[in-house]
Length: 191
Image (tube, rainbow, N blue to C red; front, side):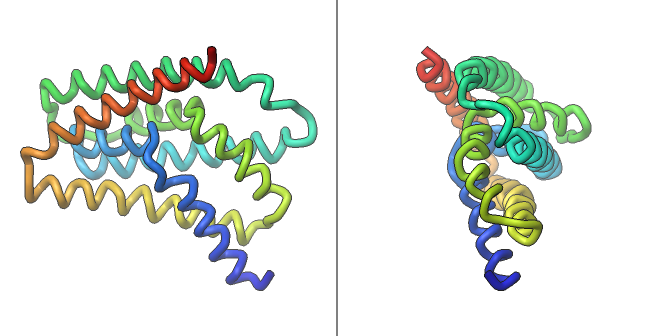
């Protein structure tokens, strides 16, 4: 492939990881609604770091370990993390704490990303295929798409709720409920 075709392919592949509704987007939405746009971007940065960690592990372990044998544990751990984050988000909604963002927000997102079964499964499937196809240009395109999404998504949410502040609480509650539903689904899959 020509380098710009590789870059475009990686960019599109990156959106296949970031755009679908899931626990991480729900958490980014919650942090944006409760703590502000900056917290949403920091949350996304934690998620992107998790993708970097997961991608590195998958690429390194693809010929050594049978990672599929650990999937039940991944589902259970991911469920516990999601329930804790949903509880924390709902509690934050009731107090509507002032905007804040920092390392704690980043590390919570990193923990969710590393234990998020959707992200792990994406890396075990599409990411693993990507490991055999691509090189550094594909990787650059993938992380460029993630970087665009983790800024664009909180900006759109923040801008929309600034015009309609009554929507903020609803988005936060809906995102928290979505995290609990995903946790339940992951427990179901583990059983």
